[in-house]
Length: 293
Length: 293
Image 1 (cartoon, chains in turn cyan, red):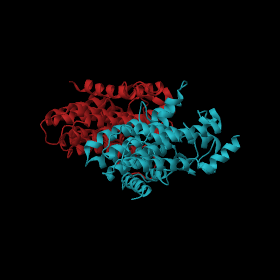
Image 2: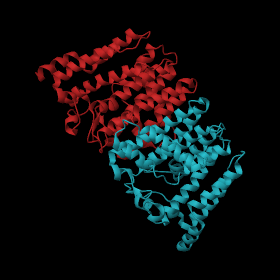
Image 3: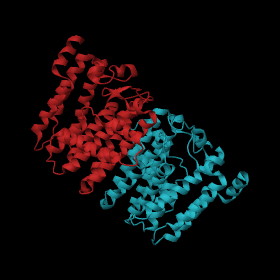
Image 4: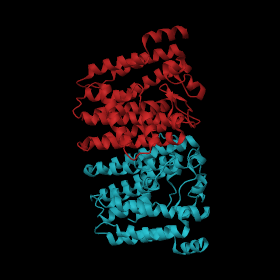
């Protein structure tokens, strides 16, 4: 099956379980709003791509791993958008969950999505429990404390922050988990894959910084210039758009070099190149460079 | 080992992992504040008591199950206390997490505790993976959507609510999960134990309603009369304190009758009787009845 239908199918099945009969109707609606329609689904795509490169011999487990990673990403967005953090009104071109359903349901929907992610892994892992434990540990490390997304967001509450620690935790950790989980779901060692994911996350963060600093709301589906408004570190603000673009290109090359040896390495390199182009289209890069010059 | 040292030891080990080197210091402090000092630890005590009644042949797994249940309970308290929900200033006689560390860290600490709960189960389940999958599923069902704590809190956001559904989800589900997890950690079937836990949760909810309606802040460690102030359903308000006390006594008897056949049934019945007396001391019950008469 194609990548996106697998991801959307797995997410749909997970959401159907968590919004089944007996679920408070507003919570069910908030949960669906948090997950559909999706954004780029870049983390579950990464998870699937790595699993395929490693053979993907347990597609049910791969799909659950991809869905878990995306559910956790959605949960982090819902909570990060809330008034006490970014107070964002728009996400993916639609009202954020707390704007659509209120703060209480946004808080609960995020919590429910975290639980659902681990529930999905457990259900899918029943038939191959040897892979389940490292999968759970890898995914948990990507979101929890001390080094996952939660820690990344918590660095925003500290007075002294190492920018590398911040980005590694806020963005890199879940990319690393997505790649590691893809390998583990396919029975491969996560060795090398987590490092590959971390590098990809670093490149993605620079692209996101450039988009935030230079793009407009229509392109992003959410307001631009949020980092500046919220006083958050941003590569394009610190080094200029042209400097950040050069760094992005260099990082993408490094990511491609970091693909571990595996039977599907060539296809994976092509996919990374395509996704990096999709994130910051060449035409758009040229225009940004001209604007920044 | 005695019950409480086992619980505190397991929670301490879990917290040490999640606040290890590299953790943002304020997040680490907020996490510790959310878990220590504890309240009655009634859910992990229940989990341990059921595991013991079933043989407790894997004490490491039992301890992880008990810790997971308590971590999830603490997470729900941190989020439930936040301004968008109960806006509580005090918990266990101390400032709530958001009062002590701000809303952002309260939000993140709750998230991190949910992740940590599943991480603890995964780590402890590595050596007996056959028990891990049903354990994870049982614990997840107790907190997630559609029937766990999150759903219980979400019922507070609905205009039409069945009181039974609300209490089963908000309180009963995690008691059911604690009892079921205790059985599963000891290799027993959760059959019967979840129903026993659900009934115990029902009794506990009535006791909590009575304490909320009739006690004062000094006894509770948190403000009394919150249900009335927040417009939440309360058994003692609906049926009077004397009516609620009678119902409580009848429910405790039912809980004791519901102990499934097992080698430690007698000890478990004694424990339920003692805990029910600790929750609403007889002397105090007499005084409440006189006041209510």
